[in-house]
Length: 470
Ligand code: P53
Image 1: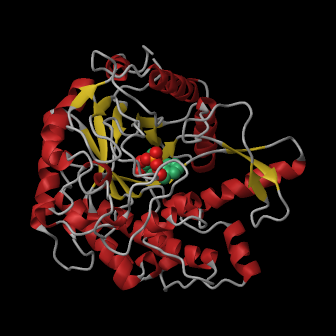
Image 2: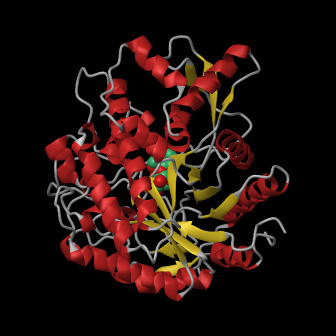
């Protein structure tokens, strides 16, 4: 038996990508509400508020807000032991800077968590998943402002107190490391509500922004443990290994430097202090990162309990002396990519779990994994998604090896988007991840009818056998 008893099999979503109801129940406008639909190679547009004539796919998404009972029942039928979603910050604090929460928003998540518990499903909850209040962008410049620390902590504490007997597993910031990618607008905006200005040193801004988030996250961990000592509060990073392109020593340095751009986030959140390579970068570049007295002690006291990761793909780094990070990304000839160019690499998951286990010695949870596919139901109305089944079987096989042969501690597995939803990076409905098909297209047309795909029955069997029957 490789997967431990009580292993958390489930799936993961984020509020803004499925709830819809963007104005229901007193909800405020989030950063996701001002992003249009894009496509492969066509970035989503970030508009200055909600403009007429544009398509904003997150406004309605798949209307989980009004369909959640039916959807949770379907996921229960699938056999979910847990369900990861996020609490839309804008349902609780519509603008983000209020002092009192919005009761109607709080009640929605009470009902949702009750509904999960009805089926013995454990909620796994992200506090900030690409959906911060847009007001905080306009008024404060997003996480550039130190003021957001207290606002986030107020939001976190409100949720911790309200749901202390309903939720045990928490994460502070989803994929906090995505914003390392300062060159496109998407990541800094969705992570942190940051729009870079002409002429500024984006990295200096990034490190200041991240410092605010690290302090906010650590404070949430500290406060959360006071509210319920049984809480498990994790960091959450997108983990994509970058392999050296060849065995040339300089390619090894390139891959190392490339990975440090991500490890910087988890080093702070798991070890409780800044790593030397980052302090040196600040010194060498003359960066001044503003900190308040007590911040470093807060980081030390607010280390996370577990490591939550998403895993989709791997990369390859080749040494490039002209690059800031000494690395340039090159394609991997040994793996295939999805229609969106994401390189599929199940063994990379085993590799990543090992690296993280050795670096941090923490329990881990895979809170996202999956493949986006173009899909249409066949003449019987069912999507025959054998490609998805193969993708998951291969990844679960590698998780098994990591547990059985390498001794990593894995708490659970939540594939991304168990029910089709709006893609984060492209805003498409037609980048589908689900075990359940949702009848809606990129233009927003469709009946919203939910239909299990072939993989639904396959994953049901996997869960029933605790990962033995792939
Ligand atoms: P979509 C980039 C790289 C890896 C994961 O992504 C990423 C991103 C940014 O999109 O995001 C995570 O929908 C994220 C989810 C997202 C999922 O991966 O772009 O946490 O919100 O939907 C899949 O195909």
